[in-house]
Image 1 (cartoon, rainbow, N blue to C red):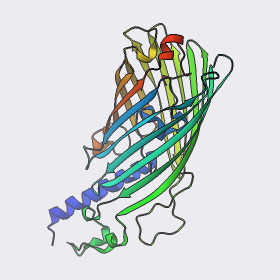
Image 2 (image 1 turned 135 degrees about the vertical axis):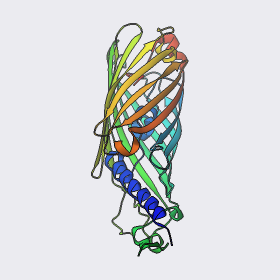
Image 3 (image 1 turned 180 degrees about the horizontal axis):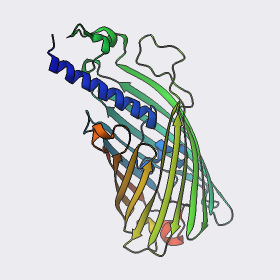
Length: 350
């Protein structure tokens, strides 16, 4: 028999967990997301696989959220991608990549491990290769698990006491499935001082069955996630670059919108931007949820970015305004052609 204080403490955990779950579904539905959405390009849009100027790209990202409210929601991942076959005569090329992401959230230690393989074809249009159209396909394997021993259920509280079992016995602790994604991206270097990118992607196109219930309805499936991206690079001088970006995505009844601008200032040699040393700061807003501040450093093909979310949703009181901290790392191995011919993928810095 639990005393009154223990019951109150457990009840409070349930209330917070339910609130966080509702907030998570309203922002991001059932898939992972990042404030620095360009820090995980292949989870954003398969067409961004190999979509850069360089020999290969390696990325890593880590996110910690809700530590001020409950057991932290922790997400980390990494990827590698690059050109597989290139026709130097026409600049078109085929690229491939691999990525892995792991997410753990809440008192129940809900874990999501996803491994994705991507392939994309990049077609350059026009004589000076200032326009590019990219098509990407992606397939992946996901395994989700939950620690049922760490969860409490409403029907386990009876007559002021606690009786474990019941609801938890109706759940499987682990599920797994395959998923299919696809995307398009269009880049245009309008002039030396302005370029832009448009993209659209569909995730979970096969709508795999996803349910921890042992007697799940056969029609229960993971909803498709559709997202669109718009970004630009505006040159404000020899050393200043302004990079506005906007991302919208929807999954089942949930939507997420992030918009803002980043400012990059080159402090090193500005001739070859892909390896120049620069610092950047930015501000973004996730509509109805949080204000995002970003900042970091770029040097010799490396990029180190930090982001912090200041929560402005209904959970603001419980979280004290604290949202999530994020760090993103990226390295692009420079292509010698960048030095010899100053060739660059349109909008490569977005």
